[in-house]
Length: 463
Image 1 (cartoon, rainbow, N blue to C red):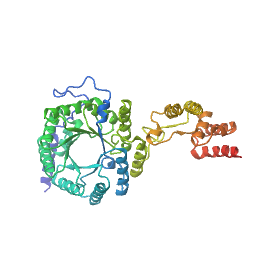
Image 2 (tube, helix red, strand yellow):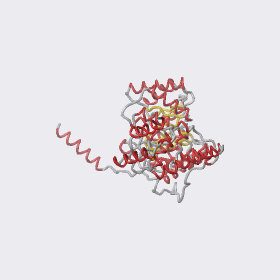
Image 3 (cartoon, helix red, strand yellow):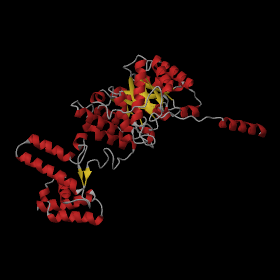
Image 4 (cartoon, helix red, strand yellow):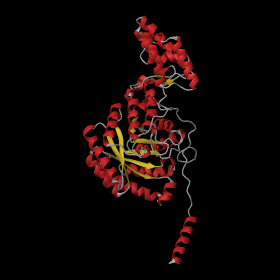
C-alpha cells in the first residue's frame, strides 16, 4: 500500500513538472495580426453613441459578492423601484447558486416580486454551462417570463489550465448550452469570463460559436480589472468587426468591467466609443475585490456628454444621490469621505472657497433686488458650482460648509446662511469665537459645535 501511494505521488510530480504554464493575452500591449494595436483612440464616446447606450445594473448580483450578508427581498425591491425611477431598465439579479437553498429561494422571491411590481425592468441571471444551471435558469424563467440568461464560460489560458479545459471543450459547452437555453425560449446573452485576457484567435472562434448558437447579445468581461482604455477599445472594436464579418452588424455588445487598477470608468467610455451598447455598473462601485464600474461615475460622465451636446439626459439625475444612498445602506457599505459623490463631494471649509461662494450669493441677491429672476437663478447655480464639479441640486443633494483652521469669516457666514438663517445676525464676536475654537482644536468643528455657536447668535438677535 505504501509503495502504491509513493508511486502515485511520483506520477503526480512528473505530471506537474510537465505543465507548461500559459501566458494570458494582454490587449494593452500584445501584438496580433488579427488585431493591430491602435496608434490612437477616441478620448471619449460621441454624444450620439452615449445616447443609445443602455445601463445594466449588476448591483444585486456582482455587487452582492463583495458584502458580508445578503439583503432582504423587501430591501432589494425598494432599491429596484429606485433604479426604475432613475431610468435603468436592465438588472442582473442572480447567478446559479448550486445547493444554496436559501439563496435560491430569495432570488426566486425577488423575481416574482419584479414580475408583479416592476414589469419595466428586464431581469437576467447568470448560468454556467451545466445541466443543473440550465434547469435552475428555466425555473427562474417560469417565475418571471421576461427573464434573460447570461450563458458564460471562462476563456483565458490561465483559467483553462486550472480547470483542465481546452478551447474545443469551451466551444462545445457554449454551443450546447446556448442552444439549449434558446430552445427553452429564453433570450441568451453570451459571455466569457476573462475576455480581456483571451487572444484574438480564441475570441474569434468563441464569438462565431456564440452567434451561430443563437445568442442575441455578446458580453465581454474585464473580470480582474486588468485592461486599460486602449486595450478596451481594441478588444471591443475587434469583436464588433467579427460580428460584422459574421453578418450580424446590429448585434449588441455588453461591457462588464472591474476597477482593480482604477480604469473602470475610462474603460466604459472606451467601450462605448468602440461600439458597446450596454455598460454594466454597480452603485458605489461595490463588488468583489476592488469592485465594479461605478454607477455614479458612469452616469455622471455620460449625462454630461449628452447635456453638452444639447441632448436629453437619459436618466433622472435628481434621484442619483437617493439611489446610491439606498444601496450603500442596504449592503452596509459606508459612503466614502472622498471620491465621486463621496461625503465631501460638495463640502468645503476653505476661506478662499467660501469667500467666492458667498460673493456669488451676494450677486444673486442684487439680481433679485433688481427683479431679474433669470440672472438670479444663474448666479445661484454658479454659487453651487464655483468650487464643485457636481451641482448638488442636480443630483438631489445640498452644499455643505464647515468651519476649520482653514476657514475665514466667509466660512462662518456661509455656513450660517446655508442653515437657513440670515448671516447679518452674526456678530464679529460670534464669528471670531468660532474661528478661534476651530484653530484651538486644529480641526473642523462638528455640526453640533457649530450649531451651539449659531444658536447663541440667533438667540441674541431674537432678543
